[in-house]
Amino acid sequence: MKSTALHAKHQALGAKMVPFAGYSMPVSYEGVNAEHETVRNAVGVFDVSHMGEFLVEGPKALELIQKISSNDASKLTIGKAQYSCMPNETGGIVDDLIIYRVKDETYLLVVNASNIQKDWDHISKYNAAIGAEMRDLSDNYSLLAIQGPKAVEAMQSLSSIDLSAIAFYNFEVADFAGIENVIISATGYTGSGGFEIYCKNEEVEQVWDKVLEAGAEFGIKPIGLAARDTLRLEMGYCLYGNDINDTTSPLEAGLGWITKFTKDFVNSEALKEQKENGVSRKLVAFELNERGIPRQGYELLDQEGKVIGEVTSGTMSPSLGKGIGLGYVPVEHAKPGTELQIRIRKNSLPITIVKLPFYKP
Image 1 (cartoon, rainbow, N blue to C red):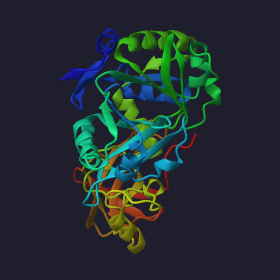
Image 2 (cartoon, rainbow, N blue to C red):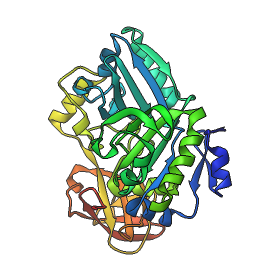
Image 3 (cartoon, rainbow, N blue to C red):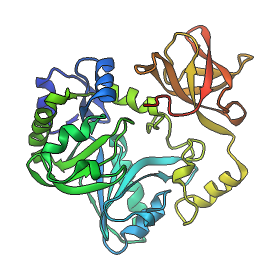
């Protein structure tokens, strides 16, 4: 079991630690609901250093990225980031990722912790014919997510640059918490604004301490993975391994907006055909009309009680006070407003298909 550079800090704060993607990670400190509310209303800090980072460099860097990713990375200018996914050869998704253009011929790919080796092998397979320079920085870098409506105000004292000027999905390489050359990225997985901070492992303790110190008067608290999941689910953000995987197509998953057919990429012909002919199932969002908590794997039923799909992610929404979830159903049942059912233990409870996001600030 690996641990992040902040493992001792989490233990000292009384975090409940759990195994996640091969790492010992804090799942909660004071409880999911309290931590969730902290991020929605103030500011919280997550240690997400388990994520993977690959550096792709050289004159062939863009060619490789264009081949393995679904979005159009040629649109990236220095200082911009892009959400994308890596399609596999059989219609599914290897992983979803964020691509940063750091310099003219230098890109940073940030991938999911559980997929680091799989992603590296997949990209390397295509790089064999292209020849870009690749480096796996995952074990050397730490990542903090400082999220919430007070993030800019709480963190401004830690940097000489104007944090409020960094637009969504843009980043700066600047000083932060007394450390030079830190990536300060206006990205996140919560829907409540804020930043993601990339620094070296040996620098992250100083950054963590100063973040908690600077944020104290704004009510900052450390936040665990449980609240990270409820926050992202309220926004309808996909979680790899739940809502997207090796068998779900980006078009089925509602990721058509990051699938650009202006270029050739892995399996693009088949996905283009799928776009033209339409998909047979879709990832939908639903709310429970009665009390109950949907969980991954629960069956989704039509009005006659026939099983038509299953839940991929589900929770009791702390912000809405009701059960919410995502799941795949045939397209004829996917329209917002459609009434379906969910089987929770022996009961069938009514649900309604809704438009995302569940949570609207």
